[in-house]
Length: 132
Image 1 (cartoon, rainbow, N blue to C red):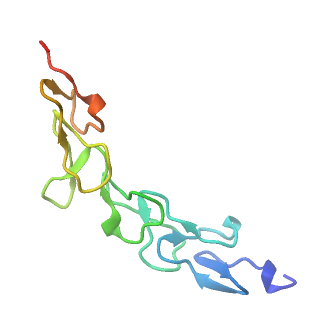
Image 2: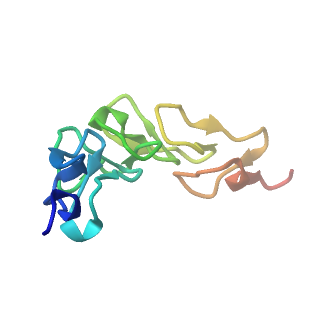
Image 3: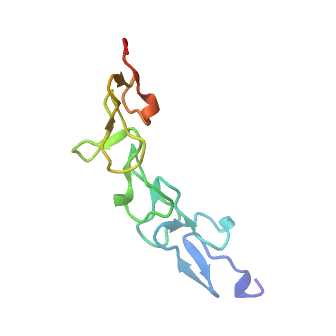
């Protein structure tokens, strides 16, 4: 390259000024073809150390609320699942739903309605019980 300005830093590093610095927390850079900058980790992933070449996936049935998450602690149970007192997420039982990511409990369907299965993700999954 004729000058440092035209150089692209290697995987896990971002161009800053005339130099290269490790990707910040919450970001990663998988390849030089990606360009000079590290990218925010997408929802459902995180980067808890600097200089990562790929973001780390949240555990099963969990996700982050937004891009750029920096710790596994930001991974919460996905819609339809709740933190049932253990370390793993459990599906909302029949008659309950959860429409967001995070620690919120499952919500009960309105009176005289229920869901046809577990892990319902919206109140729209609640249908009238026979006779109502």
